[in-house]
Image (cartoon, rainbow, N blue to C red):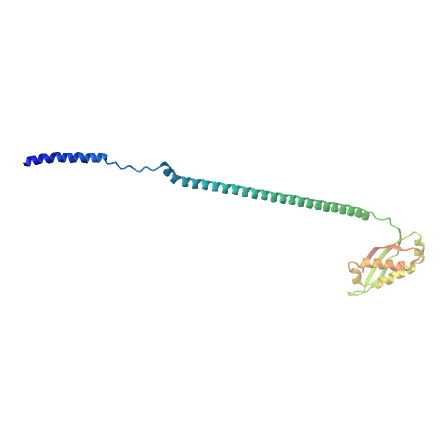
Length: 224
């Protein structure tokens, strides 16, 4: 009996195993989740867009910088050109002024040379009338001193010689009085003799009527 029941169970267990196998075969296997192609590209697309935008922004910035740099260089070139033009104009003005000054200096030198040439050429001398020497006493801080001098008169006209000869005594007297009124200190000054010459000429011309004394020349002048 026990064996019979075992035999019955054996086929049943086999049937159960076969049924389980059939169930496993019939049970659908789980499918692996496959990402769609669009989903894979969807993650990389924003990155590409950002990269493209970045490249575009950098390009625009580079272009803007190049344009700005070009405008700056152009502006600087214009300013440099303007400065160069002003400098050139200033140099031309300075050169022109220097040329004018040089021409003025040359004209001045030429004029001075002409005037100097005229001064070097002695004017024609008139008739000279010599007078005898004079010896007069003059005052001095160092005691009494004597002035010995001799002079010649330049006449404005030869005909004046006759009047001078007639008035010779009066002319000599006037000269002696004038010389005696001078002091040693006055005559030793830088312009002492020059002033005396003018005074003698003025005094003598006051005594003449037919002409004048053009110049007085001292041919001797010393102190004792």
